Length: 276
Image (cartoon, rainbow, N blue to C red; front, side, top):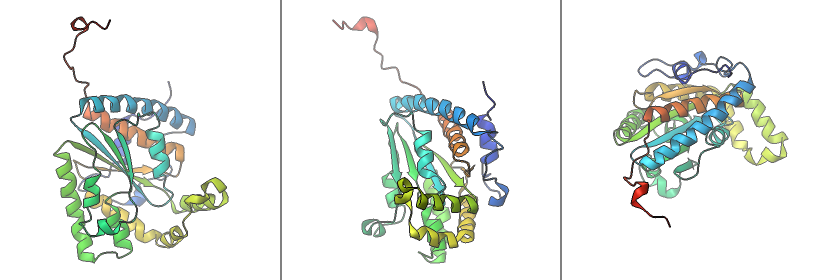
């Protein structure tokens, strides 16, 4: 046995309480409050990853509900690594990951939620969004990619969209990976210094880094406006890779356990058949 926080403790500590004012400065980025050392975090992650696999198998067999996991965070916050770790034991059957980049010309010809709705999980599936529809109130807001009045309208539109999804069998859990400016600087430098990671470096990230405060304000506003009872936001401390992955795994496991998928009984019995 080892000392680890319960799922409920993690949920309570990271939840952006719906209907409340949010100050990101009040949420730690280090994660030590949950896991005293990285060894504990790694043990917790391993156990939760195995549990997530078992729950996903039940979900896939049941085929009556689905789970959408949104990973959103500033550059280098760990979206890729968290996805890989949390679902490291999960069968690819019934599991999809979609990374949203710059919209294509075809996507720009439609409403901004069209490409999001197109990639929703089917019944029985888990789908992970690496970035999401929130880019349209984050990058869109900071970079002035749409008129301010349109950006303002999108928060309510997103809430209505997510409510529609949850009313039709999709459970949504949204995780903001919260890092400090100092940690981001270290990780950007690491991408340059480590040859195997250099492909991840994008000079454009340095331009966004200059807008750090603007992005923090945009994230704070998006979380505050769009953390709802039916699609809550959780703010995950992400300076420590091990603690970030373990915290995210606890939250995903908690969402699946609340869904409580059941393996259906097809009605077959051994005495009905002669295998030969």
